[in-house]
Amino acid sequence: MKILENVSLAQYSTMRLGGNARYFAEVKSNNDLLGSLDFAKNNGLTFHILGSGSNSIFQDTGFSGLVIAMRTMGAKETETNNELQLTVGAGEIWDDIVKLSTHKDYFDIASLSLIPGTVGAAPVQNIGAYGQQVSDVIDTVRAYDTSKGMFVEISNKDCEFKYRKSRFNTTDKKRFIITSVTMRFCRKNIAPPFYSDITNYLQSHHIDERTITPIQLREAISNIRAVKLPDPADIASCGSFFKNPLVSEAEYSQLSTQFPELKSHKTDDGNLKLYAGQLIELCGLKGFHDQETGMATWKNQALVVVNESAKSTNDLLKFKKIIVTIVQKKFGITLEQEPEIIAV
Image (cartoon, rainbow, N blue to C red; front, side, top):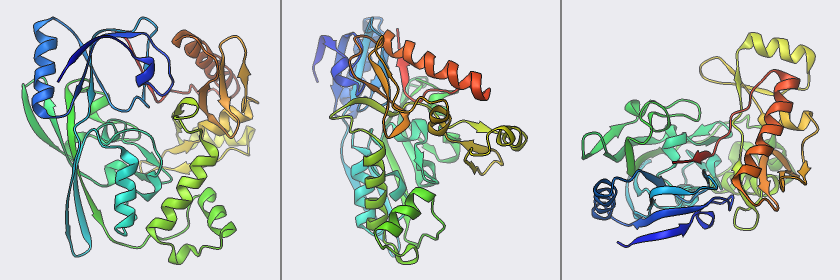
């Protein structure tokens, strides 16, 4: 493992913004991780754990400590009857695991196809889409507990999963460094109705909802996302920039009286999930280009913010404020961003 100095962080963020890291290390094993943490401790440095950079936005001032890029790889499979267990290194690309599971005929995370990021980042946000979320399949998370100075296994229950949340980004933020995730899949049929986007796609491609296969569902989701979302490899973006807000039934009733076109989806806790993209679009901001900041909302999905010609993270933050302010004024809802702004 090498400790590098003054490394540009823009190249490690899919938004392609941010200053330099004072120190930077890629870790490929638990020993590498322990060595990098010792380096940070011995030099009085803070540290930040980095996956693929699809959920990290760095400040223009950079990061004055040590950025640790998790590159622990590998996937161990155990399959019996109609169940599959996968233990996957934190550095593996998430979509590769979705592909693997669907090709083994499991539906469990097919709807999470083409979500950018690494396996280690998936539990932190409890990533989800089209009614599925990673917490549905997580058995345990293996992590280094910086408070106890030891590796630990954390059960699904103890991860404290909620909508786009877990203990890893709330109560115990920065305490645990995820090194691997164990997931369990059960082979079973998936029953319609699907989300309207999926139903429309299947109908237009003459695919029967009742006999759809995991591979077909993955292909449908991937094609839908490819149309709606830009490829971060080609266009600087963090994917979905704003979280879908949750409101109570009473709040939704009041909003839908004024805005009857508002779509919603009932969550397990009885709240209603609105769609941030629709809120932004109803404000006339879909495909909105701001010349001053060089930022824009994506032409096919208002939820997505893209960097067209921005020179700084400050430009992004100015643009975000424009969107949040306009949506708040129209709907009384304050949008929250998904990617984390990293500062030290």
